[in-house]
Length: 251
Ligand code: GLU
Image 1: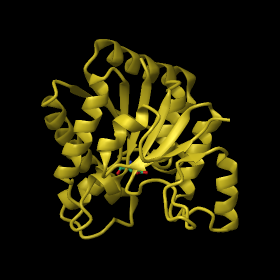
Image 2: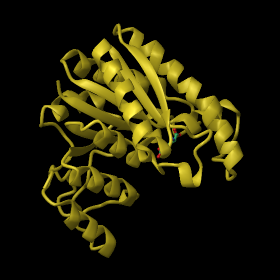
Image 3: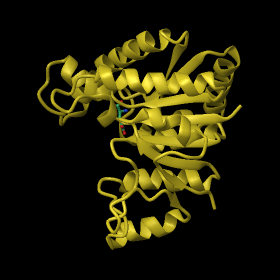
Image 4: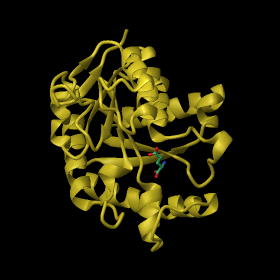
């Protein structure tokens, strides 16, 4: 069974206008994930959106500058997020399981093997989609993995996944020459060099940290793609090796 780790960003899950969870976007996403799960892929979802959902849930107007308020937002938003996923996946006869992790869960061999065992058991039980997020209510600075691109990379390597799919609000890396998605990237280092030198071969606005996570994953021998999470109907084609996305080859 092919193991696919899918990371979905806050931009896909929440509405830009008011920061609320975007119900329409979630329906499309869950439908696409349930579809590939039904096809026999083993899926683990790494979902952001807790802080975003908590901000609107607590009636705040903007992203909180201080850590305790962000942690409170995550605590409120995480339950909303899981509630939404649980209700939607139920339509497909699929259960969800929540794992909230910190960097320690990866750095400590004993703890990481427990995480692996839990995920293996869930997979064996069948019809369960594990949904992972950083444990934002406790993970700050030194015990934080950082961002969810990196978290999903660490999950992918921990599980020795077949593919990591990063779902963002863009179709992939865009070539400014053709204005089209760069479908295959043979060498992640060349992209990172362009990014550093700002030579404009690829538009990577806001993607520098994402590309670091891509590099880490590709270097570990796991195929990685960036695709548009607002068009999740492409997922089935993407995991089958086709579809609109940027595909980073392992070396
Ligand atoms: N864990 C954060 C959240 O759920 C998101 C972090 C990230 O997207 O990088 O809101």
